Length: 428
Ligand code: CO
Image (cartoon, rainbow, N blue to C red; front, side, top):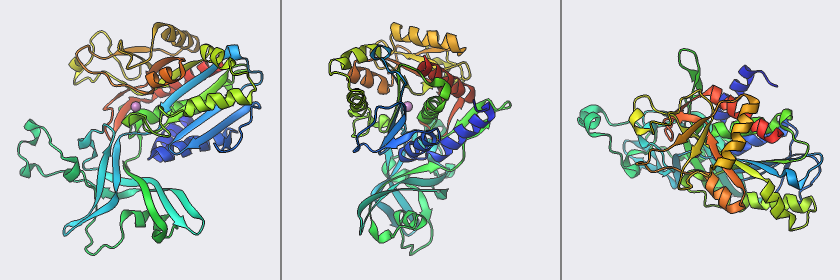
């Protein structure tokens, strides 16, 4: 097992490099490849021989380990999470030129806390699509340097902002300023193309988004806190990948599956989101490759389980009244099981018992979250997966503060505990 300090560095490195879902899928795939995974193309036939495999679909990645002697009764053990985070995305037009400077035209992706994007040094990353002599191609691109900034309005020009609350219009007030040079001819797509040795004349489209260039850091007097962008939900992606690459998590009889989806923050309805038949297709292909009769698919589902791993709300010390008083959630006190009577989370007693059993056996503490009855509850990919596959699913995750801010906060010990729990799940 890699020493804890080295794994913490790897977690920070993963968070820093995964600036877009495409980059997250790439980072996960590279870690799996280093652990011996065969990376397959979805258009190819997939083998059923023992080993670790992965396939990428845009910003999503699935990976699975075929055991030495698979038994249908041992089932499939699925861990699901998401690669995307709320952010600001470049409109196709890209640039708004004004006499005062060049701004980036942006749309808000997902439920971002808009104010958290102000006064930060922003980089940009995502994909550029080109049409050259070889036809259409898509390229992963990134500038992880401060190339843009959204300055907030001075208090002298908005005297009531502290008492009255900050009002932002996303169309007008969230445009990053990226140049004050008049007559600036290039736009951000051209700058990115040039950085990656692509002919700007061949660029026809892009999926680009901004990120804070301030790197992830361990903070607090005892450095127990992890301060970073995209904690929701890249810490789950990291923990799942770390667990799947851990040789100790290898089972002899059950199949391990990891599914990291894009587009959770906007409802999962896309060709690569959790509402797409990506996971179902993977299970069908595995069943076919193992040459199991069609009816075995149902026996397999009945023997299988899924852990839907996503961020949980820690109790905010400055706003304790917003939280359910009987269910305080502390950072550093272990992964959190998420409950909701209206099935916004998929956890039920049977699934929770399975996780409590695992946690007791690997020495991990658990906490139980439920939203106040007078506040609406968020959701995640758990209920979608449970309904789509008919497989028992449990929602759980690492407690954090400032969810959906450009900078979030959690305890790194909880991320390590989650990885340990997922290893034990796959090993069992
Ligand atoms: Co999330």
